[in-house]
Image (cartoon, rainbow, N blue to C red):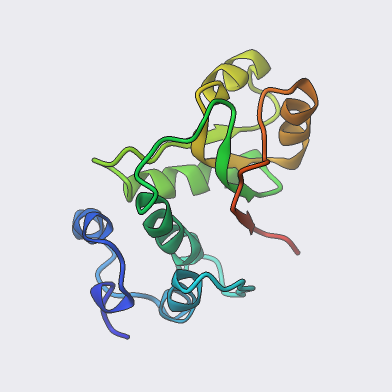
Length: 159
């Protein structure tokens, strides 16, 4: 596949892609996106800078856009876990580019930041929660977030 349109992504995502430097799918994107679009589990391995976040993020956003209604209070539709604050921030920044102009909400939670403010941000629910494991556990133990309706899980840098 040589274009993002050939991968079957929604018009809203294709429009957002036009405003980025991404013009054609990288090998990891071309191989991963079709599998994820079909709802299959996937484990991918690629060098830094090859577009792994878009490889899982674009089809994830596509599937969330199809839902058309907001998540319930404290609910999360998709969870992305990564080991460091720096990586979490990078993932969130990359993901926020694609759903511009849509109702999809991306929320970041990490240790070292205000637990109260993060709990407040989750009170209305979020489509995508990007989290470090420790802070996610804190929020779960306090009852500030629920994963009962979480349908998608991404483990980034799981090695």
